[in-house]
Image 1 (cartoon, one colour):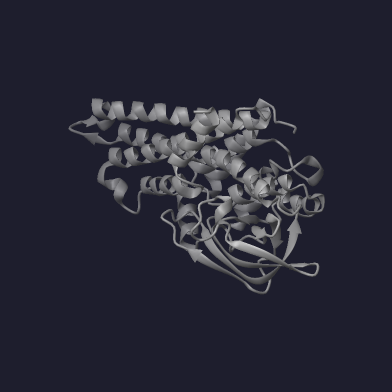
Image 2: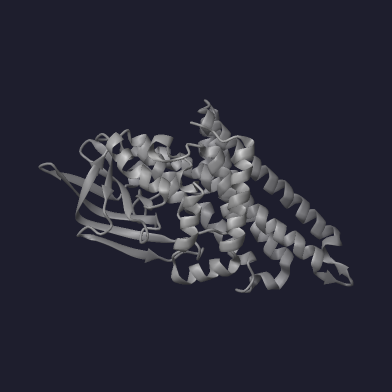
Length: 370
């Protein structure tokens, strides 16, 4: 892995921040919410041209191989802008699953397309009622001669309708196995799911006797998915930390501008104390997410422990910050026109996206040996 230098990483962050300020404003986000896509092709092309879709892809397959430290920092900015593009599911989780599959043919076929942004991939992991565990895989695979056929349903699939590569984990006689499925294949159907966060695009995918190509060894599918979820948790933690920081900044500026009784409301002691408490929450979340990324890139023995800590700490900090921000804004934040509720919705949805905070608290304690 060729990690970016601090200077290179700052330059990349600055470029991405300028891109988001230009092409991912609140106006853009609300427009994309209306058509349930979450982004547009122009923005995705610009993101890809900056190399952000290839941050985890090795250099021989057209990527940057920059590691999760760079991914986490980019996701902070994405979270602050409420970006709905499929960076998390395609550039982070799908790439991680492919790299962990050990299938050189699949990697050489798919990773260059994902790195270039020419293809978008998503993962079919859990059933429509599942909880991101091996026991709740909703797909089964049967072999007829040399061909595989998949049946069942997958829920909570991010960007299922816009992805042109589906990576599905399905139960076989030898255990969970990873497969590539063409979204246009006969027997596939994709249904949009409602989401509390209107910037989050989720779908339910049903497969009926659908042809699939095996990726990796039989029974190795869940280990590939675990790698994807591990990377996804760190990226999501970065997104949550960045979202919390942004809504706090918005709230502080409002407290400076909004006057009550002839004074800015930010001068009142109660508001100062709330803002100070939230600042600690946000800084702690950023620290947790960044440290988890460092530990993951170092492949440290306690990397799991720090990842689980970031998973619940960043989720809870985002929810608290967004909820308190709404309160500090007063009634205006409850209106559809104000952005505060968009951050609150994103924080609530992200807190449940890969499992509740309490689940990761338990995982954290287990990793510590408690």
